[in-house]
Image 1 (cartoon, rainbow, N blue to C red):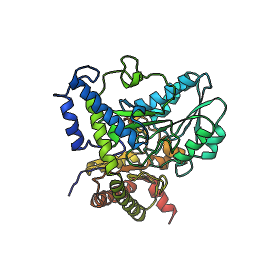
Image 2: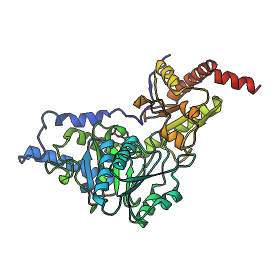
Image 3: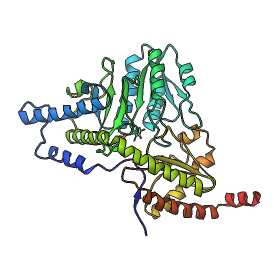
Image 4: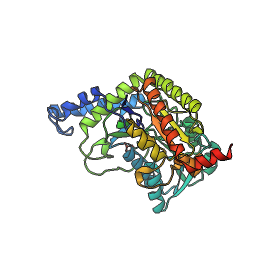
Length: 393
Ligand SMILES: *Cc1c(COP(=O)(O)O)cnc(C)c1O
């Protein structure tokens, strides 16, 4: 029987019904502009600030340090560009890693074109940042360290506390892209020494086009959008009221259910990884086995083209993603898989499956049975595999 299994929750997640329900009145009867003076509008302002306080609490900080944005990419852009501009009189050196999301890497390219110097720290074969290299890279003119909390392709969770300690010791601002981690892993910004943190609604069963940037109190950053006085004058524009309400609801549920939800995901994840590694020859797990997002599976299959694999999975009703940068229309393998040392041909045969709370072991049994058939079929058509089999006889 053909099923439909969605295994691309790192790309986006469905909004929860409670989220949509909470949002709806703000399109119609509660359409007021929160900046207006009459009382119904003031209620909208209050509702927004309640979401701000709720989010602040999840990070161990005050609501007023939370600034709503249009999502993870905007938060990343804001953090990097504003810190660069605010501190360029101190220096023009920024440190990041080789496995960041493109919202960070392409912003770094831009800053490089504006005269900033960027150092890209290596990760080890499991995708964990090399802390000694990070500390060695810090110079008197280093103004910012930006390292992601958890990786979107291979799921590795970085030693964020240690990174925060290093940054603090050297008086450098620390930003983290926590888009994949927020709502999955408990985070306390003070404990972790985080000065700025990016998150996004649609990665935690909230709406798309809404996110936030946490900015430590007292950090001097320029405004991202100039105009009205919204978001303490740092990000002007009439608030995305329904989006903020939806994000607030999604965050509330994500934190209420975190322990139960993620332990269930971990169980299904580990079950699937064990089955794949045991039943499909010539494949490997990418990323750290334990320091890993609860919902991430990333496997490389030798003698396989990731793209062909995805197409055949799609025909079986399975939505997954490859490790390669296929979205940009380029055939270059993923920068993350290359950074952990995979050769091009292995990186090309990679598959990312990211689970949701609704994903069951039965779903994964269906997926793995299909995967076995497809891998067999693709290998039977591969001249490389044929040569390999002949040689090993
Ligand atoms: C999805 C994602 C982003 C971008 O977030 P958007 O809200 O889609 O702009 C940034 N960083 C990471 C790690 C992501 O997974």
